[in-house]
Length: 511
Image (cartoon, rainbow, N blue to C red; front, side, top):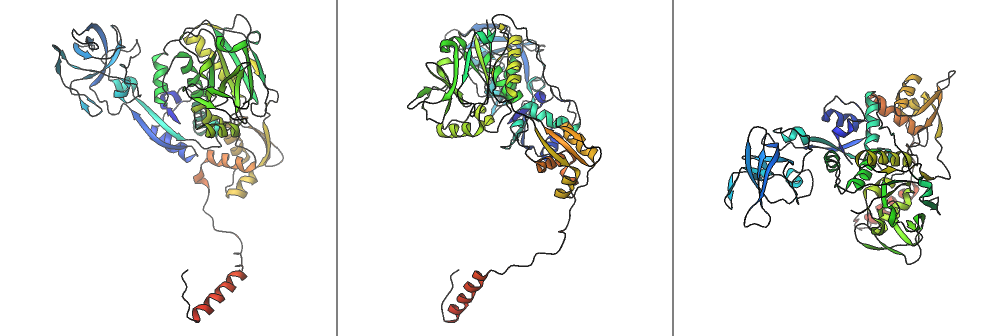
């Protein structure tokens, strides 16, 4: 999982260097596989500029001649991208700049001198799109070094299968906050709900609550599909995701932020305004968002309407209800699906997605409402429209926090490290565990937060305490007590005796 450092800093204060941060997290059990420095190769010769004049080049069906303002001078640039217009602020590679393997030089094309190059995301190394020029935020100042505007440090984590809570930037921020004893800042929601309640607009039926413990849905109407703000697209690119449109980008943004996969349906394309969560029927097929028709088996969980499938639960949505350029009302799904079923479905279909990789790690059912509300807030702020009151929430068996009896003796017995009750309470409290100490002993009751699905017993709590105080605090010790007596293997003795007899009789052993 890729985590842009500037995004991480929105939730926790970080003063150490990226290298120090990576080392600290790795030593605490969060393996940082790599540090990526976006913009490290740009140097001083790729800057911000603004297109102040644009005209088509006579005799060419795609070239344009532009005049760009660098803040100090105007330069002429030939460009073949179709997405630029007068007033756009763009990355400009000056003569002498190195873009990938290309060194920019001044050249004459069809009678026009070009004194640099406008850059696409792929040329800058911040995305795969080469169809157009990267358009900067309209508020960007001119003449800045691009690395000071778009430069980023990205930490790439190897997330363990049992740590679904770390499949989010807030999850990583929580660990940083605990290790550095800093405040964790969670985005707040303040929605302005109005109009018809969501419960009167959509019906949700969950037929298999074992495979779908929770299904939450919200509705927003009166929206216009379009591009996302530049800052959001830039963050998605740095995190390894391609911007698509404002609604899809917001669902992906919240998935990366909170760890809760979301899916947006075009509300008008959900037939009879009824969502049904069920297993696939015999011979059922559906076309997914990647335009592939897929055969479904009886053990696969689907999101359907009364007329057929609209999504493969936890894996990918269906083309039939896809958010498109004409969408004005979005039904937002935030659900929790059984990890093993999502894994089997993903493997059977040969279809692994960012959503399925998270569901496979056992997500907290309590995330659904938080994720849906955060997405609604971003849609309200960035797109507009009407957020309809309420959330349709099917949650028949709410998860209960686990309580574990724990003692400082557990730490010493397993690791040889002596800790005080205060140290244990401090370490676990920073990780959002609730610790109720016994005043008369060194014991305590620990309430495990629901998002820590990996914590099952006291040994798991020992690991958490050691992670916080540092694995290097474990002393080197020699085995205590007498060494075990060797056990004689009678079968081996007989085999050894027979081998010696045969060798003595002239046989040769090949083993």
